Length: 182
Picture 1 (cartoon, one colour):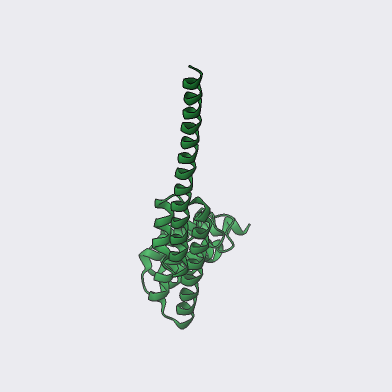
Picture 2 (cartoon, helix red, strand yellow):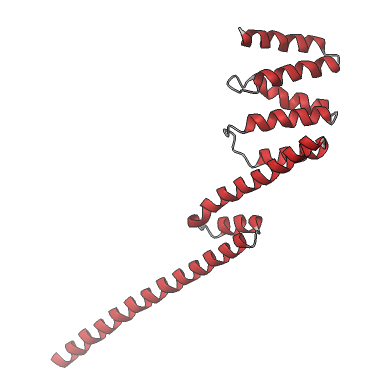
């Protein structure tokens, strides 16, 4: 009887050790698989495959690499912004419009650089003779009271309304602009 209890205790100890070892193995295997995913994500990032990187990070919920998505957005913004400014300065306004739009897509709604991009996008649209689109972009400045580009944008909007024969709208914006200057 003592011998049976001894073997029962011994078997219980071995079963417990087996369970602990098995759990440690599973945890180690899961950690290894996660680290392999992280390495794969870093490879995508290093090779400049940013779209794949972002999708991969989201797919496998690699939160420790999400900070790189912000870096990617900023890099893309800089890339599109520099191309837009270059084309703007060279007078390639149609191309500048596309780059300004792509740069705007990289910014958050509350980014202070957004107003500047909208203003130069509008100028590019006007110079590309895309007046309807320019009016749409410039109309956002009516509600942006704290923007340093507001007065210039509203003046440009007035000029467009006059060009397109919309004198009443031009006068409304002029009144608004005069109220702002007071």
